[in-house]
Image 1 (cartoon, rainbow, N blue to C red):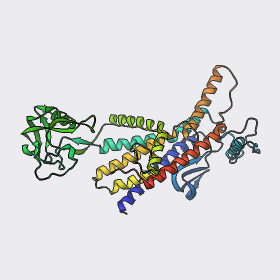
Image 2 (cartoon, rainbow, N blue to C red; image 1 turned 90 degrees about the vertical axis):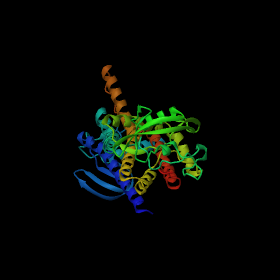
Image 3 (cartoon, rainbow, N blue to C red; image 1 turned 30 degrees about the vertical axis):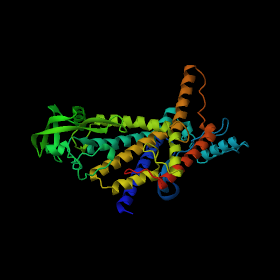
Image 4 (cartoon, one colour; image 1 turned 180 degrees about the horizontal axis):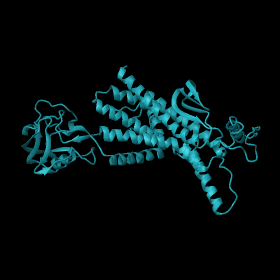
Length: 433
């Protein structure tokens, strides 16, 4: 196995674990600020690999790098009428017993004097801030990564510069080949003397600023002579070319063809730096696409199932697990791309994962952060209504009542993670096909 591939996987996991650590830090800081006791801050799951204690909190790393958590005391309130400092026996019903067991576990770490340091007794807006801190940190990281990518490195764009990969012969679109053969006609570009590195600046007297401009002007011209303005080695020049009419794929539907003007040049891909305003637009567009993907997640998981067990092709817009993303990191580093493009794709991968993790955690279902946020908002709404109507202050929202649904959702998430792991191992989504 290529050492660059292994290094790419390692670098991605380091970036992923750092993102997870900062996500949990987004919860930890406001929790401590509001006086909630936090016994543990952990990155990873399973047995502890390394830890240290500072104050009342144990900080550490666990062996399974698939997430992280902070443990806050008193996440669930006691049953109405119970002493919040004492445990009681569970009820006999299966669901009620499950709920009572969870309440007991939530109260086990509550020590004398901790009554006002439990999570459930905090103000509703404090709960919302604590639980929003993790996803918010992911959004901040995504914005930072996208800013580095777009402003510092740039996005790959097709520039109106003749590429070294440009063929010098006319290849019919139906033949689907890339190499010239004896007897092939020379392209109008080759006849006119265009060379790799020439920048197209005008076509028939009209200015060319982008490759889209060049494509539009060439295709709409049809067959016939035209003057082409170029810059070669810093010197402006004018060439005379005679375009031909050829069948080419349509721009709006590549599966169909149309007869258009043909010059025979390919663009050069360059990295073009963007503005901060474009970062906002770029991230906003991706946020919309991620939101649509989350809504369609059940449908997407059917596609993952088919890819895992029927050999179907993985959907490029479908979900990818941690292992699959790590393999992408290895694929990026081991590729033949220029170092700048490797770095750009790597940063884009980390930015996209942070954006997806942040939005996934905002789904208003437990055990996700969004479920706790929804509980806090519901409590605020109830208390606000009671205040306006001059009614007694309602009790804290008891999210323990939805624990059976929470456990069902947790089982579904474990199954989804297992399915993604299997698909990522045996039918991974590849960047290079």
